[in-house]
Image (cartoon, rainbow, N blue to C red; front, top):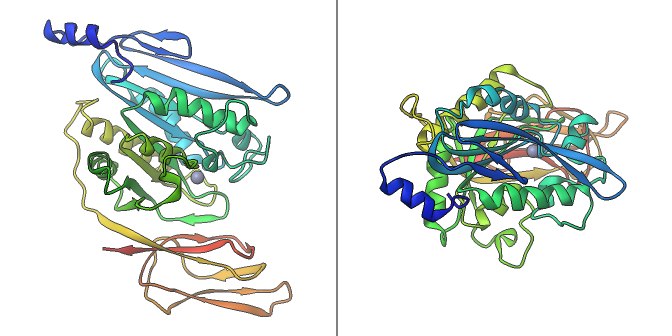
Length: 349
Ligand SMILES: [Zn+2]
């Protein structure tokens, strides 16, 4: 509720009304009970790009939820879910404000470039909190940090498996023992997103969460500010997967009910498997990767996951699971590069 004028807010509250103040965004006023679209220009003087953002200002008072989609522009289901949310979040029924960044990385989206923004070669999800004087990707991060994250009481960053990533859908939340309240609220938000698996991002001792270090990740920047922060990973291999688009939309709407920002129905409870540790296995070679495993497959330690050959069919390395667990992510296309993550295994609690 950081963006409301506190005195007016308490006055209205004491009078027993529930009128939502209008919301200021990018120099414009979004009236209570309406939504407004913004196309925020970003330029380094030579390269021009923009950020499409929709701001929903509820008819009644409530918190501010920031949502980012398209931080990686080749991860389509969250972007398409955002397009659906334009219609399915009715500001007349909303309490509080939703700031929805439709496509944070339009350069990556329009040029069909996985991971990086081809305009400057940078990965937006390693660029936070950004730099007002930097390249366009750093400027995008800076804008989102100051105009979306800094205004939010709750934060969600939505991703999918990028072009080569066969990924199992999950929700995740940031956790730190020195921030019990933000951690616990994030956990409840992640549960409300209605995925079968919930992953804990344990941040104790993580460099990117230390005060004088760069947060790098979009949602880590939010959590660093003590804002309950969750991630979605839903969709894979650069596909659009309509059922996953709808799954994200449904999850976000349910989370809005959980946050008491929508009250169309009671929040649905789900049963979850919690994953509190992840094991990363990377490739020792450049070559061709073969596997019969898929995201969501359960493996036991020592089970064969696949093999890497050179470009003449000779086996360079056989990959065995280093842990029991479920495959969260696996490279699902043939090229592999030395040092790259081939497979991520989640240890199920
Ligand atoms: Zn991503």
